[in-house]
Amino acid sequence: MLPEGTHVILAAEVRNDDGSTKHAAQVEVVLGVTQDWMGPCSDDPETCGAPGGAPCCTD
Image 1 (tube, rainbow, N blue to C red):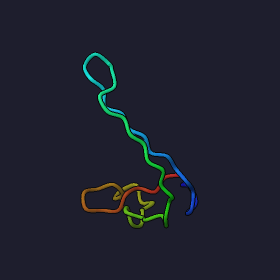
Image 2: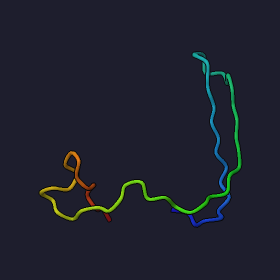
Image 3: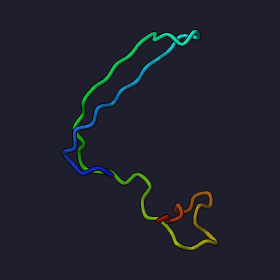
Image 4: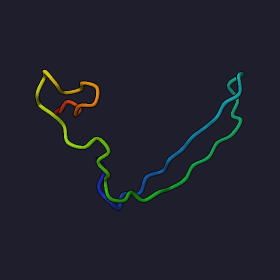
């Protein structure tokens, strides 16, 4: 994770079948507060990662 306030350049490119660039763009953004979309994780190997359950915690 990068700290809040970090400047990041996001870049994307779309290519034609022949490999030539069809469209390219980039934008600089400043990161805000990190959002936890996964919620709490579980250390229980029997239940973590199960459908509807908490994801497994990883190091």
